Length: 331
Image 1 (cartoon, rainbow, N blue to C red):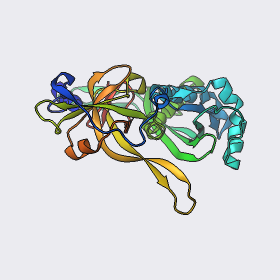
Image 2: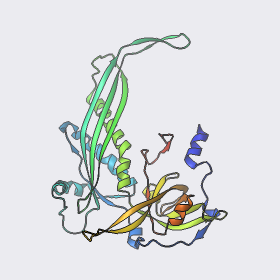
Image 3: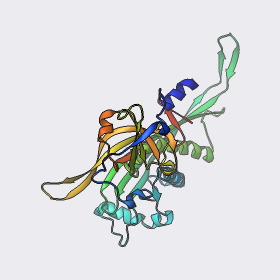
Image 4: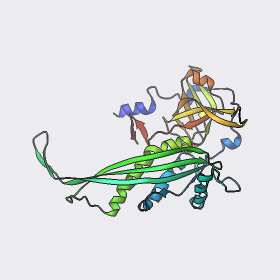
């Protein structure tokens, strides 16, 4: 099993080491990043105070806020001070209706995230004491117990500031199961246990679905240099990128690569800049605080990548300290 996991994490042939490559000069993208963009510390995000549908759910707002804020920070973004976010709550709610964030002065953020606990519930089932026999004919008893299942749903909206252009809306859903030995057929539990069961469902919901939000608001990183395999020029390539450990770079993580293009609407004459996906790569084991190397062996993609092209982590459902192996998250 350990051998299978090792292959899944590192690939069948391993990664191309930087020491076995040579630098190759390639063209610079037309819309290459400026020095300020290269030194950017990520998107500045307002995480608005957590809303809730039921007043009883108020006790969970701090744990939800802390969980989301840690995920945003670990993905390389910057969070606006929580006290300031609290002060801006009413302005953000008004901006949702008016379509414009009215705060004057310097931009306080790039993205506003508004989260609401939509529903929280749990159910229980009582299981009587049972007599059982194992495969060897030995008799044993399973004590009476209650099984519990909790469910949670959250609604998340992300907006660009100050235009209040909707980035996307998300529904986070999760469930949690546990059992407790007890003879009480009503499955009565304490308020503390109830809190833990419901909070676990909220944590599951955030972990299972927040990767979609993190992908949409991921800070832009960039291609800096190209290095070709000395024995296979143009076939196996490493690209030095600005995705470092602060942005969540880990060995084996997938990245998406984009050309940045300028679009002009023929009717409105307005111009906007879009990221066009051109392919995917994989981060190798050679990572540091300032960047990492992305491995690519697709010749068509290799020939199209330019210095300054955009690179973004493609986050899966697993946590920042986990790997996904055959659909299962492991540390």
